[in-house]
Amino acid sequence: MASVVAHFYCFLSCCLLLPSCRAVLVGEEVALQSKDDENGKCGLVGASPWNPGEKMLSIGVKGQEWLPVAYEIEVYYRHPDEEWTAMTQHVRDKFKVETSGECPDRMFAISPSSSDMATSWVMDKESPRADGTTMWEISSPYDLTEEETELSCRQTHMLSDFYKKPAESNPLPERRPGLHVHVGSKCLTKDASEERRLVALLLVWDKYFVAILVLTKSSLHAKEHKFAETIKKKNGALFDYLWDYVNETGFKAAKGVKSLTDKFVELEPQSGSPGDPHDGYRRFAANVCHLLDVKCGHHYPEKNQVKKFGALEFRGFDAALGELARFIIMIVQRFVQSFCHKSIEDLHKVLVAGDGDRKEPSNDVRRLLEFLGLKEIPSHPSTGEDHEKQDSLLEPSTHADASDAEEDF
Image (tube, rainbow, N blue to C red; front, side, top):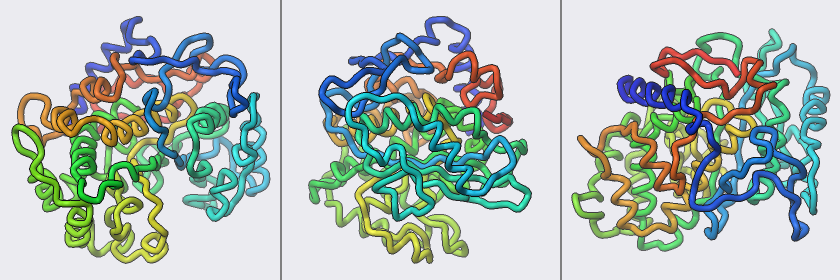
């Protein structure tokens, strides 16, 4: 794994030195980064703060159905913690960006209760500490539309001066702030007789997971994967079962979604540490426990009793705000869209592509981005000169190996 990361970091560092690599994303279709919506829908006013006046690829694939999104960001406050009302007022003030059309009130409301996620953002202490270095969690409203997602990314960009990654250079795993993104994925299981799209998605995400972490500057989580691990590393029996669907020319015959679910249920005790009641499928890099009828944790009633809402959760990213958060959401949105809508033959091609053992991790993230409709590999997104002068979330890394990288944004 270290060689995969080192090779990719070397490639990306070279790319960052080239002016052509610092262009905005290039794809089959582009949309203005910010616009006044002409149809009365929620829109943004003024130029994007990270690429003013430029064109930028839409988050989702043009012409394909948008899949609802929700995400959580774990961050540290740059100053000594204040009580909840004062903390949320800082966020509420920053979230008042200029909009056009009819933007839902929920995009500007903040609550301490997760039961309010339909009608507001939720902000609470994820990892409280008496010394004032609390890790806070800021969660978006659920089922975000594409317009709401664009607005939310502009809003979180405004928090860059207030929030950061942890000050300690090598925090404990539970103290490493992250970004988790849920993407509506019912399109993968709507045909009960066809589960191979989901199988292909899980195997491809496993294959490119390390390269995606490097691409999205997730160096803290690249060091250690306690809370977001690949299927190959976390459940070898399940990994082998999924790969048994694959041969040299295509996929074997479908067995049905129920058959796949039954196998997940059977192998659940082998997923992570049986002695940790909170471990299980919820700690996979791509978490299926909100999509399939399987337990999220080995013995975790609070999570296991949550009604299935038909989403995949993509985990393991470092905390991200603004443009980088948008880029990560773009990757996972287009990833699920592609596995729902591309031909099963195309899914097989991207899975087995490359030289060497097809089951091993791949550092050729360019191939994956092209599959998602991105024709050029991007450099790390930039928030602009003002934020780059600070210990920016998005400052390009010069480390050769993510396992040695220590970054604060």
